[in-house]
Structure formats: C-alpha cells, structure tokens
Image (cartoon, rainbow, N blue to C red; front, side, top):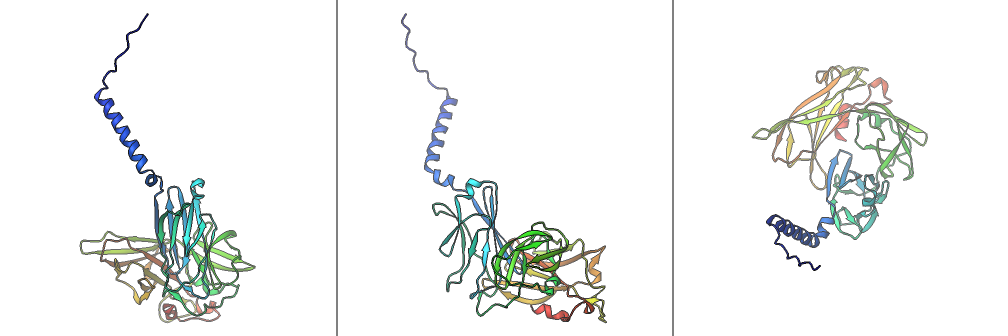
Length: 357
C-alpha cells in the first residue's frame, strides 16, 4: 500500500524564534571563542610599612606575591609564590612573567629579582601561549637603594619584640642566613615569602593573637601578636570622615604610659599610622613624621602616643578625623610599638628615637 508523502509543515513562530536565536548564539560563540575562553583575572594590593603583597585571582585560583618595601641594588631579594588552587588544570596553564623570565604558577616557586637600570619591575600573569591576563608593579621606598644593606647575623635581635605584629599580615624580620633557612612560628613550619641577606619575610601558618615564638637554626625570639580592627566611617558631603583603630586586647610591658616622671615601670607605646592613599585622603590626628618618598608617590606617616585614657576595658581605641579628597578606597596600615621599661632593657632608646626610623 502506497503512502502519500507528507508535506513540510510551516514552523510555529515560537520554534522559528528559538532556532534563530540558536543560530545566532552558535555564530557569536564561534567568532568570540578565544575571548570567552580566556579566564578573567584581577589583582589587588595589600601594603604595610615593610611589605607589599599582590593578590592575583583567576577563576578558582588565587596566587600571592609578597615583596619588601626596601630593596638594594647590590642584594636583590628572592621571592616565593603562594598558591591556593581549587583548579589544578588551570594552574598548569598559567605563568608569572617578570624581567623576561617565566615561572610556572606553583606554590613555593622562586622568583629571583634583579636590578636593571631604567626598567621598572613588573609581574604579569600569562597563559601558556603568552597571553597577558593582569599585571602588578610594586613600589619601593626611595626606589632601589644603592650601597650595601645592613649586615645581619643569624641570631634574632631583641628589638624585634618591640614591634607588635598584626595577625594575618606578613612578618618581616631583620635576620641573616641563607635562602634555604627554615623557620617555625609557634612550633609550626612558616613559609618564607621573601629572602634577602639582611631580611626575611614569613607567612604565619596559623595566625593568632598572643605571645608566639619564632625559631630558626637554634635561635628564637618571642613576638607579640595583636588583632587590629580598622574602620572608616562614610564620608560626609565635604569629605570628612572618622578613622577608628581598635585592638581588642592589648598586653603592654609598661604600667605608666607616656607620663612624667618616667620610672622603671614607664613605657611610651606608639601607634603609627601609614596612609598609602595620599591622593585620596589625609589623616588629621597624631604627630606628622613627614611624607615619606616611596619612589612612585608619598606616604603620610603619623604617630600617636598610647596613654591610659585610650585604653578601655583592656582594649585600645583611637579615633581620628580624616578628610577624603576623592572617593577612591583608602589604603592604611597600622603598627604598634613599645620599647621595654628601663629595668628590662640592656640599653634604653629614648622614645623619640623610634620616630626617626
């Protein structure tokens, strides 16, 4: 029995629109496949007085690169990558390019730096075929310094314990040794982020406030770690705002703080504020130590004496007026310093001395 051939029925309007949209998507995907296939990359910077850290983020991969803020032409540091990766297949396709060299993005990968006259240091995250994703240029205080750096022994200086360390931040120590030297913090191995013959920068394996011991090669030093809270209020129409610095628990050596007459129980703790956003804002409190040249801009540097009136229920609270010039995000670092009472130190540096460092 012969069957009558079926005629093609016209498509409904909804099906026609669907197929049209599908063809358009396939056409656009074919044309822009290289663009869509390239991962999205961002880089953010964290700064302290002694360190600067770039945070590269690509999809599920996060890599950090920490450099000192003081470098010497004669002894440039070697820095080491920190990589937290939830996408191993992506990590194998990425590299850090600098000074013509290319290093795979791997945790602990070494990047030996060098000084080149007239050339500014830049780190670029690139793909395996050399496509740049995002870049970072560090800035050094006073640029690359000439001469020789201070000679440091393998032993830790007691002066290291005079500066409180903020939990979670890189830990810069003035100590010598070699690039293979190992360190522990609280008994746990600490990653070396940057090494030079006179300075090492470490990552705390388990950040926590309180007394912690840093040890290496049979030497040790006890450091004081604190939690620091920094908050900025919303600027008013004319740019006025308030900066609040709070340390929830502060254990000081001194019993008399910045008060005359000075006794064997006296200390004068100093809160140091560093403003890396001088184009965007200014700090309206504390003693100005001057705008420190950084090679690529200025750093506003203020010092505030910590008196008993600023400590409430064991917590240090300091409020400070600030003035915003532009709506850009502010970059502020806080550092707390306290030299020992006279009776506890082999020698005593006058309180004003540290203001000059």
